[in-house]
Length: 359
View 1: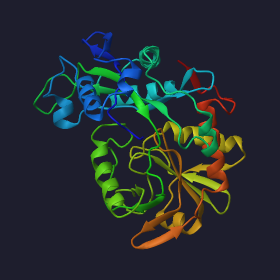
View 2: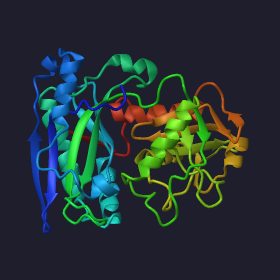
View 3: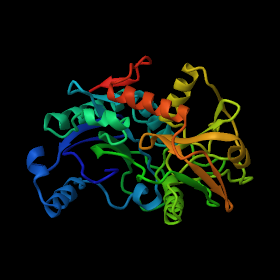
View 4: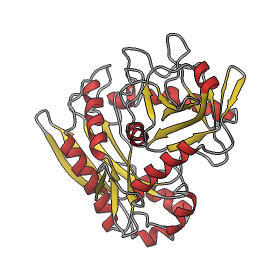
């Protein structure tokens, strides 16, 4: 199960009134978790539709009309002792504040963010809406594991002319989530579409950025690939990122390379974590420009990283009709980094950096 609209019943809302944020927790229609599991698909869909509806929210506004909004994605992971822990929410909080300020909105306070995320997950867990840890997940290194997906997002006040949101709402919703990429596919293809341009919003987790990403990913999937790779907008030569994930290239020289951050590459939190773990292991890591030609000629392992993707193996890249292959199975470094990230998140590997925050 990847993303779904099976929203948990407790949501968070904060409204900026020009001076500060007015906060509330909203309890949407629900039954017990056990009763909901017994519903027919038609009944479940009807209940989910009710939950995905918030009174007093303007339909015509700067977000719905012009994409003037931003969001985050993070996860809470079940532990064997029955608890839940969230992976690096402080990093999401900081990026969300930067994104809102980057769109000339008032930034949402980082302490509000972390507190509200924890409380939203906690209140839903009290009602029984949370996954339970399964030892069976250890068999495939948590590939089949479930987690709580948390989606904070901004939503503008009413407006029909092109403008900036000055009194936004911030919502936080949660739902169950599983593996992001479809099983059996691990190939990538470049696209001639452009995701981001200099002086644009590529560095912001902005709603409008994902239109081009969605179109390019759909084209890639229709052509039989798992994911798409975007090139830079100026020379169409340098790799930047996937549709919703950062990219890494482990070269034959033993150096791990990932595209450098700037105004066209999103500063991924899993990306940042993987860089730290690789350096902990003595791997040389470079954040720099890497051309598609260098990647195809010199890489021995390729993988994507992201909240949804985690660390996802790429077996080949196709560019302008030519394909470079990197093996039929994840390489040693890819496997190790995936094992460490998942282990830290689910509590089977020591969290030496203090990344997990208990709910």
